[in-house]
Amino acid sequence: MYCIDASVLTNSEIEGEKFHEYSQKLMEIIKDRGITIVVPEIVLPEISSAIARGTDDTEKALEFVKELKQIPNIVFGRWNV
Image 1 (spheres, rainbow, N blue to C red):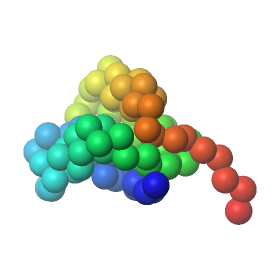
Image 2: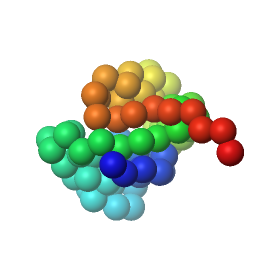
Image 3: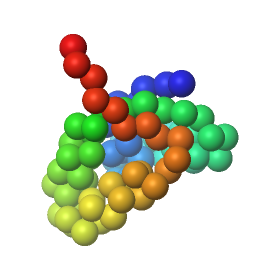
């Protein structure tokens, strides 16, 4: 089980970003191999706002978040610290 930062998830979606190809490939490997990753729920608004700002495309941002929520090996959690 791994924890992935919101910036990696965002970077995997925004073409032209530095290291986009690496982040995109990592996400493909995670999906293909069924590797479980854990992310805090706050990652969803973080990602959607970053993608919307970076692409000026709110619909793309919302669609990406919907797609992420459908990946069964991504666990969205709440942690009290």
